[in-house]
Image (tube, rainbow, N blue to C red; front, side, top):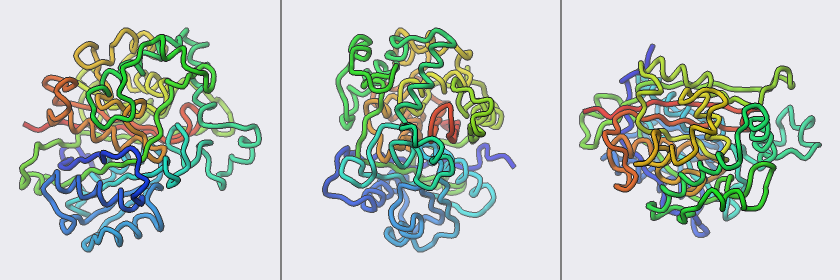
Length: 397
């Protein structure tokens, strides 16, 4: 069963806070939920499905359903794939709606890493800076060597440079593009436009990744509301329908045949494109998970926007800047400049993609005639062990 055209993203909301010392994580979830429902023109009583990941406090979905007073739930999903969880949730929500399991699905994200609510650390969506939970079976083999998320991504960047001649200056252009967009976002954590020189001259974190190659760490959150076509037709908001979705894990299988130069997007991307019936050349805008600059470069290659090994040249010289380049990305500033709560950035990728498809992004970064968009996320350790998820959305006339 295909989900193409079977579900619509009708509500989207990003919490404006980047520092929340006076709010609980549950409160942030609820405020994001209310914002997305208000945006759609719906109420908590309309929600009959709820989706959350490991950032939800207490007993996950059960606790949040109780906290938010959701009384009509008949479907719930607590799939946890780190930063890609919310893109997986969007695909799963579309599947549930297509199967008749629900009509209005609410997906929320929230966290307070700046105020002790989550362990802080720039990374690819793990619960802790290592990207490993204490109970992970591989932890005893890897953690003893002092591995961290930063180091893992640094190894991916170094290998990519070795294999394909990618440079630090090319990676820096990804941060530069994000900063050009963030200057127009009133809520962005970092609003200053930076140069390639400033990125490569910032202090080294995990060779070859510099401080400005890393995402920010913020409090905050977001939510989206996914509905059936019948509900969507009753609402007065622009209609953004789900065309295709794909998900895939990448694991290292004990190190056998490990290749650090690609991500799970090599599988999730083609699945989403096939279901949507479009190609990378048709996409007008991309929201790409950006825990580090190398994350963006590798995913663009793996999704088919350029050939493997050509990502460095593809992202250079402003090619990702809206109004300047061929493929505008992360026009809210992304995780590199805007926000990155709970070590997870997948939710905001959906939200900005929806804004672009609706024509509601900031006028300075809105992509003209932006009717076809892609959102993609990873969760875990890039190139080593993670989950990838890709979603393609279309504005319905």
